[in-house]
Image (tube, one colour):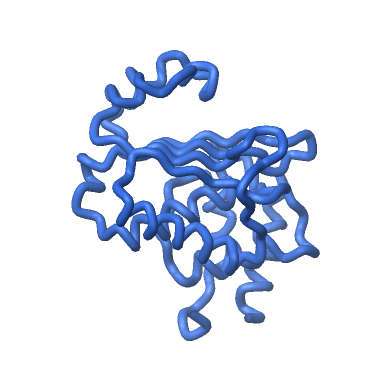
Length: 196
């Protein structure tokens, strides 16, 4: 990974800036993942990718969150209408019109974060439609990308790369804040990625 050049501070800042507002938050509690809608062989790939990604960041994965049971939920479907079968989807997402909006936007992926009182990530809900643009995606690459998307509050959809993995690892450095709203945070991340 170190053979690839790291990202610049401006590139990192862009990752976390939406509508002019900078927000970079990481998980503040162990991650308890559960995955729905995949066949066993694919399930193993995605579980492995999640374990590897969080191990690389030095963040713990656990079987159960004491408050929520699972706090990282990934839902895979071929058609967004399948989400209507999820019990209490409206309560889970807080968005009663979610399925209609995803269909209207022809979306392939949608992610919701929930936060603890200190601003760190408390939960992540990820919805993936695998019959659209993602139909031909390599399972291992898709698994790695979705794992990375769940780790920080990226303002835009990202694709897994080695420089991005360096940014994630830097963000999980214990000396870094769990949540940052000042773009100077990107300078600190950039310094940590270039120093190896």
